Length: 247
Image (cartoon, rainbow, N blue to C red; front, side, top):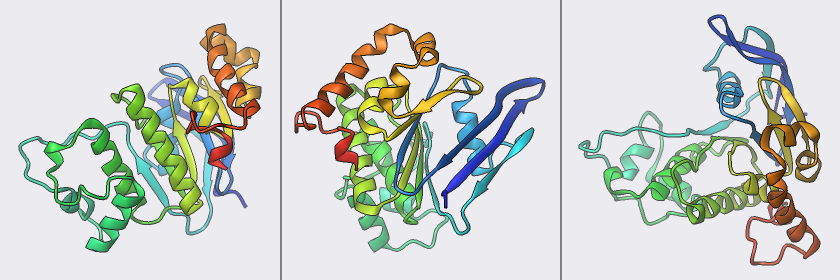
């Protein structure tokens, strides 16, 4: 049974439709990435899945008892607020210190428990948001461009951590990303969105689809070349975000 399914979903803000007749399903353990231009409805789709946006039509169905972890695009915390990472992770939850330590270790930042949130780098902050999403041991992680503002190395390290989480916990991942090279190397399946589903399939299939190239241009061939290089060369260790490594 699918973890979640979206059937004929349409979302509008006032008189402005942002999603039209979108359908997709997420299976246990897979990494699915949503790509699309700005304003294509990517974030609205995630909001509809978590119940933060009301569909105009269609429906979202969740497997009974499904646990979702959500990593937002950004979170603003008052820099003058004295709050430690541990305190942040325990806000509004019945969470133990052991839970916090385990989540931080899974997110790759096990030594941050006592640090002030205001002292974290951008990459550390996103890892703490990931840890918070992992605390309830989710069946699926939803990530809304979680590496926005990070440099390329920081983004690569973050997405490698996501693959490690999937490998270690078996949770599925549904993420929005504007980094096409990440999509090609780290995803099992790609959904190209532009108000509706333009195309979907494996990274290699989507990268050659006319609809995808119409949106992103033929310059995205470099991302496909990276995918093919990793695929053809056994996903050597120089490319930690390989598609096979995510399996």
